[in-house]
Length: 285
Image (cartoon, rainbow, N blue to C red; front, side):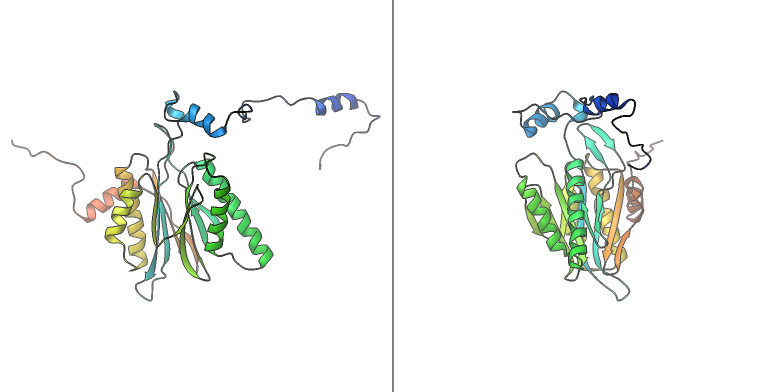
């Protein structure tokens, strides 16, 4: 290695250096210890971090809201494409472990994947997919399609089905075939959808999308719809919250917008509809 001095057998201290290298390493508190042989990892995690575990702030309980939809431009000045909107809360049982998690992960210049489920599982396997896509582009001298990337993702998860993985992801992107959204689950399920939402707050988000979604919209209407669906989902779902992160994928590229606190969005949309935020009892005096 650079910056190190090579030791010869005849130099002083060689035997001590050799014994240090051959000695068994000492375990520290930062190393992950695997369960003993004969214990299934899924059973081990369920026993110590499941719903019946005594550690209430370390339970493997999830909560999130992610959504994406494809739309066509309503005017020549609009770009169209895909809007991806997510919240930023990470929960661990009854404990909110983080309020600023980025749940939109990059795969390439015009493709992303979303996180729902276990954060570690989603981040690891999305990085595996991103690595495969980069190697494909270097080997084939062309961009990989969204369909091929999602198919590789689903095949990898199918090989680890019933192993305790918790992944609910969307692979969204724009390729030579146009915009596409594929839902990928931890059991290897893969579905192509026009409008998709995953997470504990997905039903609330679907209620907004089913009401206000249109195949043709302006870019501003599409971005507003994504933010409104996330805001209302976080308002009704205790597992979702934090900030609203939005990504817009068009034929020209990918645009990420600054995060907006869902509380600010709530007051903004309430002001548009001239709706009282809280009930004020009348003063009879």
